[in-house]
Every structure is written in structure tokens, then in C-alpha cells.
Image 1 (spheres, rainbow, N blue to C red):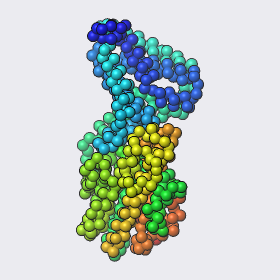
Image 2: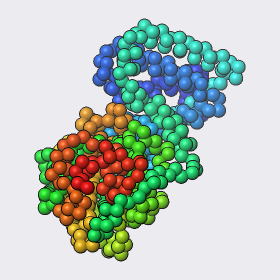
Image 3: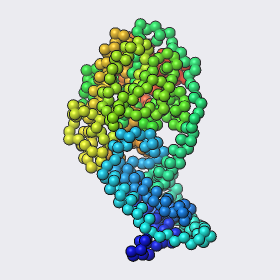
Length: 534
């Protein structure tokens, strides 16, 4: 009841507060969830009954969590987090699961700043801070421990009985809906982020200090690769957030790869390649792992040897050079450096003193260049003005405020700039051709949604992720001399470019190409195996 000008605005009994809080949570923060439910089951009766069941179950959760000294702290905490999560879901239509949360936890300051906006501030103020203030100004009457326990038991029992009755009455429809639409839960606030927190906590607990798991202890270089006349330089360019659909090399109708045309005869573009995940946190360590997507465990990746370790133990100089913060634990046992010391740098920084460094090494090398690429939502910050080939473009992180044309234009500019950088890598490798046998393989870590089905960015649960987030470009370059020395049949490989591949092929393809013999090598996953004439 209103209390006028007294210390509190309202006075509610604990069970009343729990019910009202549950109702407001469902109504205020779950617009997208209800839209998803309606999209797959457009029945007023079904949606209404689902709403009623969720309200009852959420009320049970409130009864169990909200006690005299926990009710306001927890209610305020959930309200503030709800507001942040709602904003992110509303603007980008992103589902929230453990992958998304891992992506958030492992992002850097620059990437985090890209998501901040005045729109977020207003949403958090209106849907987070204001309700939290009203919660603080509500007097919640506690009836004593014994009475509260009995009342909570009654609320819980009653809610569960009614929920069971509703579900039982429509069991066939409910079971079918839950069986066929499990991913819908990733849109239910706060269930989605609480579930994600629990899952990530389990992963992090398993990531504690562990003894390094070694692999390929039997690895050795085959004589042919050690005695082919020159030192060998393998460059692996890891792209960021580039999707295959926007590469003109794959048939896209805009010249996004125009800077690479002069190397057209030497380039091979694989058009049907799937990523290991939909976020850097998963895809990056996964593509360097001996395990494929289905067997990869994020929780073990940091203390398990990977492709870099194997290359290093057989004698290659391994060098990781990144424009973005961190390598997700991959490069801690090899030489590594992050070149950008500002909030954001253009990817051309990756070639700073590149040729000079390579010449000084004068040995077999495996180099990883990790790009910032097309990371959103601030696509307009990923390329210089000289690479702005498509206009008008979206000049804000609020993609929902830009037209479809503006979003495609600004994203295609990032791909054009990536092509310029790949062309520069190839030029440097050609310049090193008198001293090294050189090749370059480029693949992106994951793709990106640009508004298709009203979804933006990436990190969607893999089971429901659209192809835009999963299908990635893979581009291979090597000179005719390299093909001769390594006995590669270019036309044979060209015939392979239309076949289906994935990040699962990366580990084994590099082992095969670099002449690393080991029991962990799987020839069936080596893209080049069929076309090497040894």
C-alpha cells in the first residue's frame, strides 16, 4: 500500500513482493522470448498458459531465494543484470548461453567499449536503476521465520501443483514444443544468463592449475621437408568475424576481394568451410587443437598442447603476432606479441618489420598473424578511409539504427581491407621467396550475422546458429615454385575447393604440409593430402 511521504513508497508482504517481482520480470524483460515462442507456436492459449506456468515457477524461485536479508540485494542485482541482458538481446537479438558468456568474459577493453552506447545507458537507467530504486523504497514485511517458512512451502506447493495441472492438460503440445524448440530457453531472462553462469563456472573450475598434457611426443620432420633446398615459411593468418558469404572469391556479387585479383591464378578459395564455434573463445583454440569440434573441450585447451607446440618441438620457429588482445592461452609456450597498444589498430600493423624479423631468424618458421578483422559492432573502426569502397555506411555500434544497406556497406569495407592485408602478406612472402619456400593460409574464426532474421553479431548457440555465423572463408596462396618444391598439384586442389571442410581440418593439414609425422596426424582430415605427389 502507498505510504505517502514516509521513508517507503510501498509496503508489501514478502509473498506479494515475490509474485509482483516475478510478474514484472516476465513482462518487462522477456519481449524477445515471447516473440520467439509465438513464432514457433502462434496460439494465444498456448502462449498464455506458458506465461502462467513461467510466472508460477518464477514465483517459486523467488520464494526460495528471497528471505529477510537477501530479498532486496538479490532483487536489485537481478534487476540490473536483467536490464543489461535485455538491452543486448533487444538490440542484437543475441541468444545468451555459456558460449556468449565466455565470449564476454574473454573480451578486451576495446571490444567491450564498442558495445557501450547512450542507448544502453538509457535502457539500464529506465529498466534497471529506476526499478531498483523502487525496490529499495518498498517496505517488505517479514512475518517471522516460522511463518515465512510455512508460507513459502505453501506458495511452492501450490505453484507446483497448478503448473503440473496446466502442463498435464496440454502435455502433448508442451512436450512437442520443448522437444523441438530447446534453444528458445536461451532467450528467457533470467534463466538464460543464470544457466550460462553455472556452465561457465563449471568450466572455469576445471581450468585450474593442471599439469601440461603433451601430445605428438613421437613427432618428427620427414627428410623431404628438411632437405628441399630452402628454409620453409608457413604463415597462418587467422581472420576475425569474416563470413564466407561476403567474399567475392566465393561468388559474392561485390568486389570485396579486389585487392587479391593480381594473385588470382595462385589463389585457392574454399567456399564451404564451417567454423568450430561461433565465438573466438571457442573457435580459436579449437582450430589449433588435434580434437575436432565434437571432441573439443574449452576447459582443457589452455593446458593441452596444440599445433603451435607440435611445430615448435620438431624444430620450427613458432611466432604468434596479434593485433587483438590475447590468444586464448594458445601461444603462452611460444614467442608471442600483441602489437596494438591503443584501443584499436588497423591490421596492417601485423606486417611491421615482418620481412626483417623473418630474415634474421633464417630458419624454418610457422607464423600466426591474428587479425582484428571485421569484429563488430563498430565495423567502421576496422579500416582506414582508403578502404572505404562502399557507401553510405553504418557509423555507429547501434546496428538497429542503420539500414540494411549501410550495414552491408560498412561490413564489406572491412572485408575489402582484409583483402588488402592479405595481398600485403603475399607481397612480403614473394619478397622472401629467394630465401624461403613460402605459403599463406587464411581462415576466419567465425562468421557474423548482419541483420538476417533480425539477428546481429555472433556467438549464437551452435545448434541454432545461422550459416552466416558458421560458414567462414578459407583462402590458400602458394607460388608456382612452392608447388614444385612441395609437389603440390594446384589443379587437384582447385577441384577440392568446392568440397565441405571445417576447422577440424586445420591441425592435420598443417601437420601434413609442414612434413610433421606423428601418430596424432589424420590423413583423412588433411586438405592437401590427396594433392601431394610424394
